[in-house]
Length: 327
Ligand SMILES: Cc1cc2nc3c(=O)[nH]c(=O)nc-3n(C[C@H](O)[C@H](O)[C@H](O)COP(=O)(O)O)c2cc1C
Image (cartoon, rainbow, N blue to C red):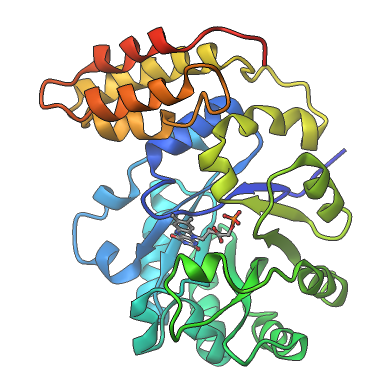
């Protein structure tokens, strides 16, 4: 059975979905589609783009997420992303950070569909990989389904292949970015409706998902799902993705120790190349979540991998706190 390439995605998350997290995720799932943290277009173009774009082929399929609103700059940035090997460029139309208040960034762009369409047209004519967007269901009072419909209608045809929708609106006055991920109620039904009304678009639902049963439920209505916090707070769930949602009996690892041992080989190379052990250790913090010794494991990584003399041994010695159990 052929599935949409967007069937199961891991959300872009600043400070989390860096290349190390993505490497760990790929050890666990060969099918999940991964996203970078958002990279602000101007920062990418300012110089040394490789600093932002560095990743390993092992992470594929991996998409680059950009933030920005200038069609020309975005198309140049998209080209850089394509040359660097990313399989998709995603435009962020959902970020509610303080920068948004000054307008023309992230979710504020939902109020400027023509500008978004111009950006998408420029970007898609510059590259041969899919251009996608990640948006919300609305912003402040403009949160009716009709407004969401009009927004998508306005950008449909401008080269967008897939629309990822965080099923919450954003409130810019009074809510922090974190509150904007928790307080506005989830409206998964609106995302289902969007797929119904735009059947030719790939629609991916995001927001509040974690269990296999709810994911399977949504996959009846949309082309794909995207998980954010569940993927970094319980990364081991990624080890079940290929079998659960792709009916593929792949040879991905389903034992936390085997996952750790494969990751440690990568960690060794990275640390030898000068990466800080604390950066390499970060994605591992929740690998043993729910298992005996998980808290000590986490404390060990936080304490030993942040020391000035930290090295590969600081990671390996954390294993003494956890026991091999069947998953
Ligand atoms: C720490 C953190 C950082 C995030 N950074 C980004 C980002 O860079 N780009 C983006 O589009 N969304 C970002 N998000 C939002 C997530 O991609 C996702 O839309 C949101 O967390 C809802 O999904 P979830 O309920 O599965 O976590 C971030 C979320 C978190 C928790």
